[in-house]
Length: 150
Image (tube, rainbow, N blue to C red; front, top):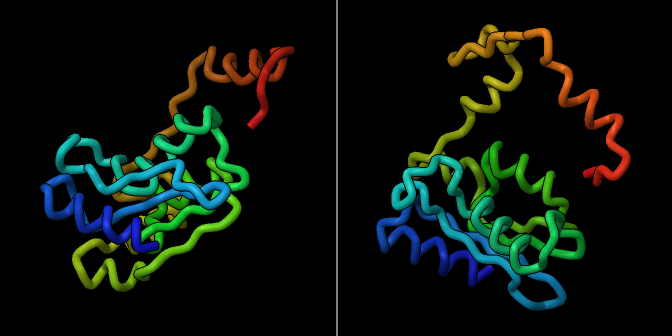
């Protein structure tokens, strides 16, 4: 956890982004590191957990983090939570809570509320737009013989 917190401090002090850091550990060894890099990359998805997941997956040569533990300086936001579930680490340890993040100006409660709304009722409307070939990629995927399910 101390490595995750040190990365949070580093990223914040070097103008990378907010005060968030994350490390991923497998067999007692750090295999992935990340800190919030939203400001330096102009990438709203460059959160510490996402950056660490990308680093660990590259390091391990796998799109899944089975057998890994994720240590993050703060309880993950909804986007990072989704990324964590897709990556499938064994456990997640976090230091600060989302309430503490909100007190520091990083409040993601509105996103949780938006998820419960119907797509067309969200602040950013989500509008279904189907065309004739909309489901073709899914049909082709179901028929693909050498697909890797994940």
